[in-house]
View 1: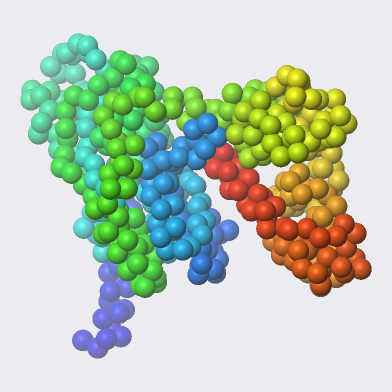
View 2: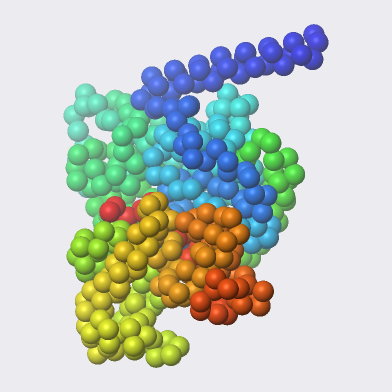
Length: 457
């Protein structure tokens, strides 16, 4: 057969297989929206110095604790990019169906999500070496009474569960029925089981280790399958990068650092350093209610304000910084006087003043129509002062670039440390080392995106 005919035949077969997989899984209540990939990610590979990752917000792999993004795969990916000397751009997705659609898209360098890798699917995707292993277990309530022998026992399995399930180890003379759930996440299924709305669920062992300490009424009752590998899906077009990733995984998974990382997240029933469920999914800081209360009047997302607060003080109300900046929002004394707050002010008074100041900056940049861009300028001004940001905008405009785009303006803010630029006639505020402010905005913004992915507005 000629090479070109082989290619055509393979394409036809692959198409048939893909659609066959869709209908097979659809019969099991699993939806695979093949075309539902966010168009905003179509240019993900434009920068070779950035590793573009889609991370499914699985309970053990990504969460917020005391304002800090954490999780096994989140930390693993950070270590990978440090080793490769790259920056990382993480897109977070908490819908398992949308995350699964990205597996086939080649729009990311890595898709970090566990899913069932059938023989058919393995032919269609490129996966990394394993970064860890787990296995399926049955979770039920403690002290559950045996039902009538004719009772149907429904076992709920979350969408795209990565392992094949074997029912051989379950009690005989009992009717077991598998129910695939595309409507609930694994965390929601645990809640339903605890609330006695369902009787059984299938979980991976690592998730069970993490969640069971918070559900005193639930337990692991049976192991339902073999160990399975947890891999990343890699971009088919990145042959060189994929080799680097696999080489790193081969070395790192044998290291002491890897053992420390797995112990940190997968130590059986160790609750000493595990944040509670509320702090993982419902709370950023002890001050969330206060921030929400005052943010309502400002028109600024309270999670953005929380990200700035974390950057300034790590949520420590008594923090004192350079130049006697103080409190949760690290006001300078002169700014504090304008807003009637001092080191002796209450936490709520500090938050109220901080929101009022941010609101004034938000209005100051009202000429910037794009909401996200406007928040970045607000953030930069909070750190550097509006004068230096306006200098950078004037330089940007003078050189023919869009002065309402933070990426453009940030270049000129950095250049304000060069004599040629800070002595330019359009500059009103002189020399400024802008690197710190650009990094400040990047860190605040990255954390804000992380907060939005986990915490409802």
